[in-house]
Length: 303
Image (cartoon, rainbow, N blue to C red):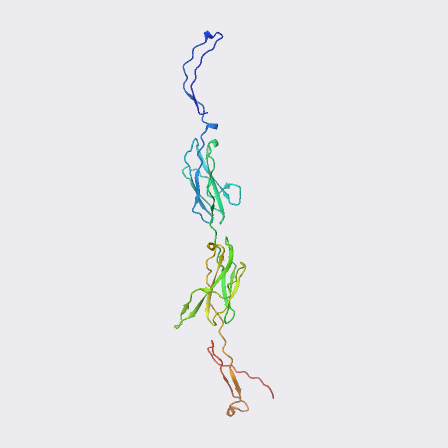
């Protein structure tokens, strides 16, 4: 095929001396350029992936010689790391412009390796190129864990507060533990809020179960306001969550005033009557008590 020929003719007789001489040479004629001699399109090369996200990546390739191909469209197929099959991919179909040698593969799974191959297809499929493959797989980005939600703190004692949250959506995180931090909101000398730095919450360090939903921060000063935040720490730090929203400030309980001591009844004889009994006492330590008075109760012991 695809070869030029010229022809000449003579008539042959029973008597060779009667044979005709050769005719003039014909014009040149060529067999068709098809079948096994058809020059196929060059194999796409430099197939590579870039602009990788958690769910997409751009696939690009180069092509040199179209050969005898009357271009029809580019075929782009994908193969995930754990599968043998090749398949079409969203965003890389119906590529009918020969000059456009890239597409954005979308709808991918995060934290997954993908390989691609590209083929030039032609009106005559015998001229289709071979498949051009990416040199190595590309891996989509991992999706970080979501920060815990609905985090709250509530009073528990004079030195502890209970922190609660909703378990986090882990996504591609290989869970390691929850981290809880606290920040005190003390009042300065002028009465406005004074904010301290975030520090680890004592009592909330052993949270290595993903289903954990609470911890008790302890060792806190009494009658002091605190706010808390929580995040997820993962085996791969890049997939750890951001911090949750801080809780509404909540205060540890105040320290109770000390009980009155030296309670004496009837000590002042001059005040003792048939209807009254003088009672005296020594107030206990005030601590966080802003006193508004004392309550005195009596109990009848005999007639």
